[in-house]
Amino acid sequence: MSATIKDVARLSNVSIATVSKYLNGGNVKEENRINIENAIDKLDYRVNNFARSLKINRAMTIGIVVDSITNTFYTGIISVIEEFLNEKGYASIVCETKENDDIRRKRMDFLLRKGVDGFIIFTTNISADFLDYYIKKGAAIVVVDSIADGVDCDFVTSDNISGAYQATEHFILKGHKKIAIITGEEENFSAGERLKGYKNAMKDHKIPIFDRYIYKNSYDLEGGYNSFKKIISDKKNMPTAVLISNYFMAVGAIIAINENNISIPDDISIICFDDLELSKVFKPKLTSVSQSSKGIGMNAAKMLLDRIDSNNKIGTRTVRVPVKITVNDSIKAL
Image 1 (cartoon, rainbow, N blue to C red):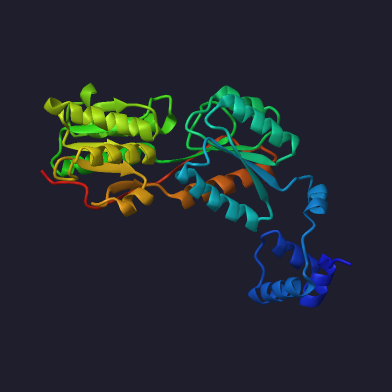
Image 2 (image 1 turned 90 degrees about the vertical axis):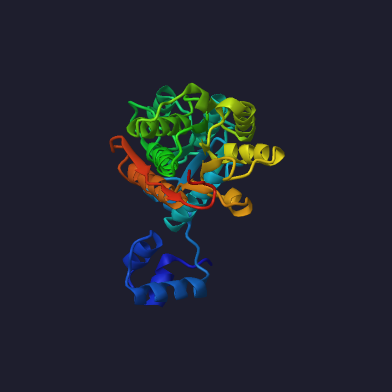
Protein backbone atom coordinates (compact mmCIF):
# COMPACT_ATOMS: atom_id res chain seq x y z
CA MET A 1 0.00 0.00 0.00
CA SER A 2 1.32 3.45 -0.95
CA ALA A 3 2.53 5.79 1.77
CA THR A 4 0.28 8.73 2.64
CA ILE A 5 0.94 12.24 3.86
CA LYS A 6 -0.10 11.02 7.32
CA ASP A 7 2.69 8.43 7.21
CA VAL A 8 5.21 11.13 6.29
CA ALA A 9 4.01 13.36 9.12
CA ARG A 10 4.17 10.52 11.64
CA LEU A 11 7.70 9.44 10.65
CA SER A 12 9.09 12.98 10.50
CA ASN A 13 7.40 13.88 13.83
CA VAL A 14 5.66 16.98 12.48
CA SER A 15 2.04 17.88 11.75
CA ILE A 16 0.25 17.02 8.52
CA ALA A 17 -0.12 20.79 7.96
CA THR A 18 3.67 21.21 8.08
CA VAL A 19 4.22 18.42 5.55
CA SER A 20 1.53 19.89 3.30
CA LYS A 21 3.10 23.33 3.52
CA TYR A 22 6.49 21.92 2.56
CA LEU A 23 5.09 19.91 -0.37
CA ASN A 24 3.38 23.05 -1.70
CA GLY A 25 6.59 25.06 -1.73
CA GLY A 26 6.19 26.81 1.62
CA ASN A 27 9.03 27.54 4.03
CA VAL A 28 9.44 25.29 7.05
CA LYS A 29 12.13 25.04 9.74
CA GLU A 30 15.36 23.51 8.49
CA GLU A 31 15.15 20.67 11.01
CA ASN A 32 11.61 19.88 9.85
CA ARG A 33 12.63 20.05 6.19
CA ILE A 34 15.39 17.48 6.75
CA ASN A 35 13.06 15.17 8.70
CA ILE A 36 10.34 15.43 6.05
CA GLU A 37 12.76 14.70 3.20
CA ASN A 38 14.21 11.72 5.07
CA ALA A 39 10.70 10.38 5.68
CA ILE A 40 9.75 10.85 2.03
CA ASP A 41 12.86 8.94 0.93
CA LYS A 42 12.35 6.14 3.44
CA LEU A 43 8.66 5.71 2.61
CA ASP A 44 9.13 6.31 -1.14
CA TYR A 45 6.24 8.76 -0.85
CA ARG A 46 4.80 10.22 -4.08
CA VAL A 47 2.39 13.14 -4.29
CA ASN A 48 -0.92 12.08 -5.83
CA ASN A 49 -1.20 14.99 -8.26
CA PHE A 50 -4.47 13.71 -9.71
CA ALA A 51 -6.20 13.72 -6.32
CA ARG A 52 -4.54 17.01 -5.47
CA SER A 53 -5.78 18.64 -8.68
CA LEU A 54 -9.35 17.49 -7.99
CA LYS A 55 -9.20 18.93 -4.48
CA ILE A 56 -7.96 22.35 -5.54
CA ASN A 57 -9.72 22.36 -8.93
CA ARG A 58 -6.45 22.69 -10.86
CA ALA A 59 -4.61 20.51 -13.34
CA MET A 60 -1.27 21.71 -11.93
CA THR A 61 -0.12 21.99 -15.54
CA ILE A 62 1.07 25.00 -17.57
CA GLY A 63 1.05 25.27 -21.34
CA ILE A 64 4.24 26.77 -22.80
CA VAL A 65 3.59 27.87 -26.38
CA VAL A 66 6.73 28.89 -28.27
CA ASP A 67 7.38 30.20 -31.79
CA SER A 68 10.44 27.99 -32.26
CA ILE A 69 12.10 25.42 -30.01
CA THR A 70 15.33 25.93 -31.98
CA ASN A 71 15.57 29.45 -30.54
CA THR A 72 18.27 28.98 -27.90
CA PHE A 73 17.31 32.22 -26.19
CA TYR A 74 13.79 30.88 -25.62
CA THR A 75 14.93 27.42 -24.54
CA GLY A 76 17.20 28.98 -21.90
CA ILE A 77 14.21 30.84 -20.45
CA ILE A 78 11.98 27.75 -20.63
CA SER A 79 14.56 25.81 -18.60
CA VAL A 80 14.33 28.46 -15.85
CA ILE A 81 10.53 28.39 -15.94
CA GLU A 82 10.28 24.61 -15.77
CA GLU A 83 12.64 24.43 -12.80
CA PHE A 84 10.58 27.01 -10.90
CA LEU A 85 7.26 25.37 -11.80
CA ASN A 86 8.55 21.95 -10.77
CA GLU A 87 9.44 23.31 -7.33
CA LYS A 88 5.85 24.54 -7.01
CA GLY A 89 4.37 21.19 -8.00
CA TYR A 90 3.45 22.13 -11.57
CA ALA A 91 4.22 20.26 -14.77
CA SER A 92 4.48 21.90 -18.19
CA ILE A 93 3.61 20.97 -21.76
CA VAL A 94 5.70 22.66 -24.46
CA CYS A 95 4.20 23.22 -27.93
CA GLU A 96 5.90 24.79 -30.96
CA THR A 97 3.96 27.05 -33.34
CA LYS A 98 6.53 27.85 -36.04
CA GLU A 99 5.46 31.52 -35.84
CA ASN A 100 2.06 30.65 -37.32
CA ASP A 101 -1.15 31.98 -35.74
CA ASP A 102 -3.24 29.07 -36.99
CA ILE A 103 -0.86 26.54 -35.46
CA ARG A 104 -0.71 28.58 -32.25
CA ARG A 105 -4.49 28.57 -32.01
CA LYS A 106 -4.66 24.80 -32.57
CA ARG A 107 -2.01 24.18 -29.91
CA MET A 108 -3.73 26.41 -27.38
CA ASP A 109 -7.15 24.89 -28.08
CA PHE A 110 -5.59 21.46 -27.51
CA LEU A 111 -4.05 22.59 -24.22
CA LEU A 112 -7.33 24.13 -23.07
CA ARG A 113 -9.06 20.80 -23.68
CA LYS A 114 -6.37 19.22 -21.51
CA GLY A 115 -7.40 21.67 -18.78
CA VAL A 116 -4.11 23.54 -18.34
CA ASP A 117 -4.15 26.22 -15.65
CA GLY A 118 -2.53 28.90 -17.81
CA PHE A 119 -0.24 29.76 -20.71
CA ILE A 120 3.19 31.26 -21.16
CA ILE A 121 3.48 32.33 -24.79
CA PHE A 122 6.88 33.02 -26.41
CA THR A 123 6.58 35.17 -29.52
CA THR A 124 7.83 38.38 -31.09
CA ASN A 125 4.51 39.12 -32.78
CA ILE A 126 1.04 38.60 -31.30
CA SER A 127 -2.21 40.55 -31.66
CA ALA A 128 -4.49 41.87 -28.94
CA ASP A 129 -7.44 40.15 -30.66
CA PHE A 130 -5.71 36.75 -30.48
CA LEU A 131 -4.98 37.15 -26.76
CA ASP A 132 -8.43 38.54 -25.98
CA TYR A 133 -10.08 35.45 -27.49
CA TYR A 134 -8.39 33.20 -24.92
CA ILE A 135 -8.69 35.64 -22.04
CA LYS A 136 -12.47 35.63 -22.57
CA LYS A 137 -12.32 31.85 -22.16
CA GLY A 138 -10.80 32.44 -18.72
CA ALA A 139 -7.21 31.62 -19.63
CA ALA A 140 -4.42 33.06 -17.47
CA ILE A 141 -1.73 34.29 -19.86
CA VAL A 142 1.81 35.68 -19.70
CA VAL A 143 3.48 36.71 -22.96
CA VAL A 144 7.27 36.65 -23.26
CA ASP A 145 9.14 38.80 -25.82
CA SER A 146 6.18 40.84 -27.06
CA ILE A 147 3.62 43.37 -25.83
CA ALA A 148 0.07 43.96 -27.08
CA ASP A 149 -1.99 46.93 -25.90
CA GLY A 150 -5.42 46.77 -24.33
CA VAL A 151 -5.56 43.18 -23.10
CA ASP A 152 -5.81 41.86 -19.56
CA CYS A 153 -2.73 39.64 -19.32
CA ASP A 154 0.93 40.02 -18.38
CA PHE A 155 4.00 40.73 -20.49
CA VAL A 156 7.70 40.13 -19.86
CA THR A 157 10.42 41.36 -22.22
CA SER A 158 14.01 42.44 -22.14
CA ASP A 159 14.51 46.19 -22.02
CA ASN A 160 15.10 46.25 -25.77
CA ILE A 161 15.07 50.00 -26.21
CA SER A 162 17.63 50.55 -23.46
CA GLY A 163 19.82 47.71 -24.77
CA ALA A 164 19.98 49.11 -28.30
CA TYR A 165 20.50 52.62 -26.92
CA GLN A 166 23.41 51.51 -24.74
CA ALA A 167 25.02 49.61 -27.63
CA THR A 168 24.71 52.52 -30.06
CA GLU A 169 26.00 54.96 -27.46
CA HIS A 170 28.96 52.64 -26.81
CA PHE A 171 29.92 52.97 -30.49
CA ILE A 172 29.49 56.75 -30.33
CA LEU A 173 31.70 57.09 -27.26
CA LYS A 174 34.37 55.14 -29.14
CA GLY A 175 34.31 57.80 -31.87
CA HIS A 176 31.95 56.16 -34.40
CA LYS A 177 29.40 58.19 -36.36
CA LYS A 178 28.73 55.96 -39.38
CA ILE A 179 26.75 53.38 -37.41
CA ALA A 180 24.47 50.85 -39.10
CA ILE A 181 21.84 48.53 -37.63
CA ILE A 182 20.76 45.11 -38.91
CA THR A 183 17.28 44.32 -37.63
CA GLY A 184 13.93 42.72 -38.46
CA GLU A 185 10.78 44.32 -39.79
CA GLU A 186 9.02 46.59 -37.29
CA GLU A 187 5.97 44.35 -36.88
CA ASN A 188 8.40 42.13 -35.02
CA PHE A 189 8.14 43.58 -31.52
CA SER A 190 11.74 43.34 -30.33
CA ALA A 191 13.09 44.44 -33.73
CA GLY A 192 10.93 47.57 -33.63
CA GLU A 193 11.99 48.42 -30.10
CA ARG A 194 15.69 47.91 -30.86
CA LEU A 195 15.46 50.15 -33.90
CA LYS A 196 13.83 52.78 -31.69
CA GLY A 197 16.68 52.53 -29.17
CA TYR A 198 19.24 52.94 -31.96
CA LYS A 199 17.47 56.02 -33.31
CA ASN A 200 17.08 57.56 -29.85
CA ALA A 201 20.81 57.29 -29.16
CA MET A 202 21.71 58.79 -32.54
CA LYS A 203 19.30 61.69 -31.99
CA ASP A 204 20.47 62.36 -28.44
CA HIS A 205 24.07 62.57 -29.66
CA LYS A 206 23.03 64.71 -32.66
CA ILE A 207 24.27 62.22 -35.24
CA PRO A 208 22.29 62.13 -38.52
CA ILE A 209 20.19 59.01 -39.15
CA PHE A 210 20.44 57.75 -42.73
CA ASP A 211 18.17 55.14 -44.28
CA ARG A 212 21.21 53.59 -45.97
CA TYR A 213 22.45 52.53 -42.53
CA ILE A 214 19.20 50.78 -41.54
CA TYR A 215 19.03 47.23 -42.85
CA LYS A 216 15.68 45.47 -42.28
CA ASN A 217 15.36 41.82 -43.19
CA SER A 218 13.98 38.50 -41.98
CA TYR A 219 14.79 38.11 -38.28
CA ASP A 220 16.96 35.02 -38.83
CA LEU A 221 20.34 33.75 -40.03
CA GLU A 222 19.54 34.37 -43.69
CA GLY A 223 18.41 37.91 -42.94
CA GLY A 224 21.65 38.67 -41.13
CA TYR A 225 23.73 37.16 -43.93
CA ASN A 226 21.95 39.07 -46.70
CA SER A 227 22.00 42.34 -44.77
CA PHE A 228 25.74 42.18 -44.15
CA LYS A 229 26.38 41.32 -47.82
CA LYS A 230 24.53 44.53 -48.71
CA ILE A 231 26.61 46.51 -46.24
CA ILE A 232 29.94 45.42 -47.69
CA SER A 233 28.73 45.77 -51.29
CA ASP A 234 28.26 49.53 -50.86
CA LYS A 235 31.92 50.50 -50.51
CA LYS A 236 31.14 54.22 -50.80
CA ASN A 237 28.83 54.26 -47.75
CA MET A 238 30.49 51.54 -45.67
CA PRO A 239 29.72 52.06 -41.95
CA THR A 240 32.47 51.81 -39.35
CA ALA A 241 30.21 50.02 -36.85
CA VAL A 242 27.19 47.70 -36.97
CA LEU A 243 24.63 46.80 -34.30
CA ILE A 244 23.06 43.39 -35.01
CA SER A 245 19.64 43.03 -33.41
CA ASN A 246 19.45 39.33 -32.62
CA TYR A 247 21.53 36.20 -32.22
CA PHE A 248 20.53 34.45 -35.43
CA MET A 249 21.13 37.56 -37.55
CA ALA A 250 24.54 37.82 -35.91
CA VAL A 251 25.38 34.23 -36.93
CA GLY A 252 24.42 35.04 -40.53
CA ALA A 253 26.47 38.24 -40.48
CA ILE A 254 29.52 36.38 -39.14
CA ILE A 255 29.25 33.88 -42.01
CA ALA A 256 29.30 36.78 -44.49
CA ILE A 257 32.22 38.36 -42.62
CA ASN A 258 34.25 35.14 -42.83
CA GLU A 259 33.43 34.60 -46.51
CA ASN A 260 34.69 38.08 -47.37
CA ASN A 261 37.77 38.13 -45.11
CA ILE A 262 36.50 41.13 -43.16
CA SER A 263 38.58 41.86 -40.07
CA ILE A 264 36.84 42.71 -36.80
CA PRO A 265 37.40 45.30 -35.41
CA ASP A 266 40.00 46.64 -37.88
CA ASP A 267 37.61 46.81 -40.85
CA ILE A 268 34.34 47.12 -38.95
CA SER A 269 33.20 47.14 -35.30
CA ILE A 270 30.37 44.86 -34.15
CA ILE A 271 27.93 44.64 -31.24
CA CYS A 272 25.25 41.93 -31.24
CA PHE A 273 22.29 41.07 -29.03
CA ASP A 274 22.87 37.97 -26.88
CA ASP A 275 26.15 36.47 -25.77
CA LEU A 276 25.35 32.83 -26.40
CA GLU A 277 27.55 30.24 -28.13
CA LEU A 278 28.60 32.66 -30.87
CA SER A 279 30.65 34.89 -28.59
CA LYS A 280 32.48 31.85 -27.19
CA VAL A 281 33.72 30.50 -30.53
CA PHE A 282 34.25 33.63 -32.62
CA LYS A 283 37.49 35.55 -32.43
CA PRO A 284 37.73 38.27 -31.49
CA LYS A 285 35.04 37.85 -28.85
CA LEU A 286 32.03 39.98 -29.68
CA THR A 287 30.78 42.79 -27.51
CA SER A 288 27.14 42.00 -26.84
CA VAL A 289 23.90 43.12 -25.26
CA SER A 290 23.30 40.42 -22.64
CA GLN A 291 19.70 39.48 -21.84
CA SER A 292 18.80 37.76 -18.58
CA SER A 293 17.20 34.36 -19.21
CA LYS A 294 16.84 33.89 -15.47
CA GLY A 295 15.26 37.30 -14.92
CA ILE A 296 12.75 36.81 -17.74
CA GLY A 297 11.94 33.21 -16.78
CA MET A 298 11.44 33.88 -13.07
CA ASN A 299 9.25 36.91 -13.73
CA ALA A 300 7.11 35.02 -16.25
CA ALA A 301 6.60 31.98 -14.00
CA LYS A 302 5.85 33.99 -10.85
CA MET A 303 3.46 36.33 -12.66
CA LEU A 304 1.51 33.42 -14.14
CA LEU A 305 1.13 31.65 -10.78
CA ASP A 306 0.04 34.96 -9.21
CA ARG A 307 -2.58 35.31 -11.94
CA ILE A 308 -3.79 31.74 -11.46
CA ASP A 309 -4.00 32.17 -7.67
CA SER A 310 -6.06 35.34 -8.13
CA ASN A 311 -8.47 33.61 -10.55
CA ASN A 312 -7.24 35.95 -13.26
CA LYS A 313 -8.31 39.06 -11.33
CA ILE A 314 -4.97 40.89 -11.63
CA GLY A 315 -4.78 43.84 -14.02
CA THR A 316 -2.31 44.04 -16.89
CA ARG A 317 1.33 44.06 -15.80
CA THR A 318 4.44 44.65 -17.92
CA VAL A 319 8.00 43.88 -16.82
CA ARG A 320 11.03 44.98 -18.83
CA VAL A 321 14.01 43.03 -17.55
CA PRO A 322 17.27 45.06 -17.54
CA VAL A 323 20.06 44.19 -19.97
CA LYS A 324 23.77 44.91 -19.80
CA ILE A 325 26.60 45.46 -22.25
CA THR A 326 29.25 42.74 -22.09
CA VAL A 327 32.35 44.42 -23.50
CA ASN A 328 34.81 42.28 -25.45
CA ASP A 329 37.18 42.86 -28.36
CA SER A 330 34.98 43.69 -31.35
CA ILE A 331 35.06 47.49 -31.19
CA LYS A 332 37.81 49.74 -32.51
CA ALA A 333 38.25 53.21 -31.05
CA LEU A 334 38.46 55.84 -33.80
